[in-house]
Image 1 (cartoon, rainbow, N blue to C red):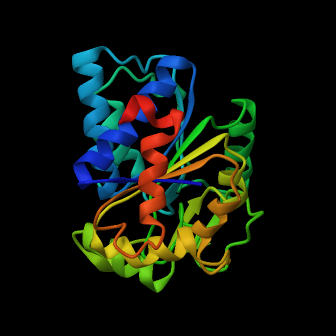
Image 2: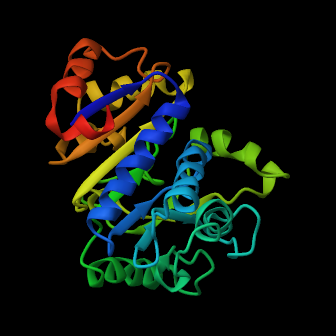
Amino acid sequence: MDVVIQPTADAACRLVARVIAGELRRKPHLVLGLATGATMEGVYRELVRLHREEQLDFSRCRTFNLDEYIGLTPADPNSYHRFMREHFFDPVNMDLRQTHLPDGCAADLDMECRRYEEAIRRAGGIDLQILGIGKAGHIGFNEPLSAFRSRTRVKALSPVTLKQNAPQFVDPSKMPRRAITMGVGTILDTSRCLLLATGAAKADIMARAVEGPITAMISATALQLHPRCSVVVDEDAAARLQGVAYYRWTFENEPEWEAFR
């Protein structure tokens, strides 16, 4: 696992966007795993800028989102379908036929989960998976005690997640209590993972996720098992990490990061 510390949240978002752009330029048919949430808005803003100012081409890219709330239609203002279209898909030249999110209104949710896994398999797997992290330590909606071999499935949301996400709803009581999410095993199968965390509120969970013991109580710790995972944090989110000096040295000296320094 690489840990890259950036001076600000904006700088961290720009770095993640530049990594995505580099992978896309190298492989125009990139299969990209995407995340939602406030942290990701800065990444998508930078990708939109790169598209408009540097002609970054998304026309052949294929995408798979981590999750979607159960019971929200794609047109619902709080659905992740809507989030992705507003913040990323519509402002760039993305072929919407090549974008995929779970259907939270499917008549048979278990079948929808199997269908989603099969769609990822048919695409050849995910080349680069972008991740955020919740205050409960979840990646996707893999709440505490999610099995590390789990696949896309329905998951009940934890009280911590409900409290964290409820303010995004005009009426917090209307927030869904369940979601469809890629499993931890699905995420670990991706070729490369890139986790972004910013802000002091994430400092404690980032220290536990990166440097703590591997445990199903914090699904993000499973990323310690991934053969190619990078974590990008700002100074606030890095505040409780113990290996900061080593992480800074690695970023300054590893050839892989030369283009991003």
